[in-house]
Image 1 (tube, helix red, strand yellow):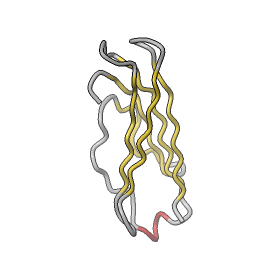
Image 2: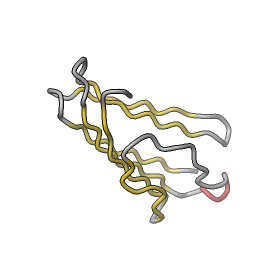
Image 3: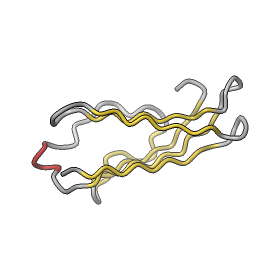
Image 4: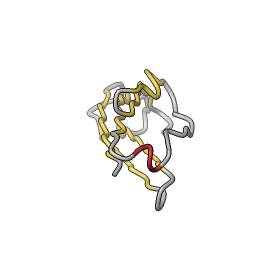
Length: 94
């Protein structure tokens, strides 16, 4: 989303997929259906509001593969410009 900055780390079980990303994370293959079974994808992000128009922060997680693609839209309104919101998303594959 325009008007926000981020710091994001992504892990799959104990393996770091991406560390301290300051922008959008590009499409990345994290494994096959059978290879992901029982694993946990963890996304930790801090998003700062830099927009003068709104105090809304957003994070959209898009997973594709398996039976169907899934979007996880997350959002939080902060008190004022410059404030940040912390996001933690855990996805367990089964």
